[in-house]
Image (cartoon, rainbow, N blue to C red; front, side):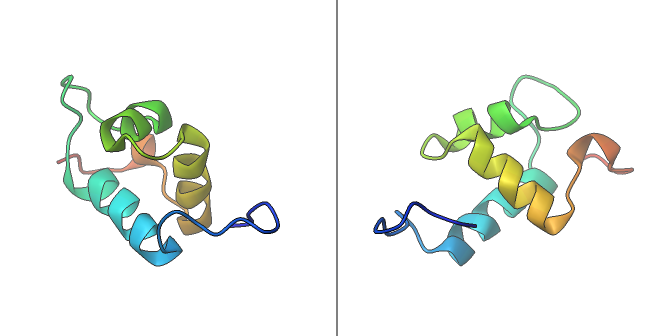
Length: 71
């Protein structure tokens, strides 16, 4: 991830990525949906933007709508 020069990340990047991936792969959305959207997950986590979720998913090749198994 690239950040604006001079700005330190609010959380360590590895911890943030682990948190997003954990929610994506191991939890179901509260609204009964079969998979997460970037906006739903960002709202659930509360402290990150949907674009950050999107970048993390893209970096790790995660596509929740294409997973064969749902939680």
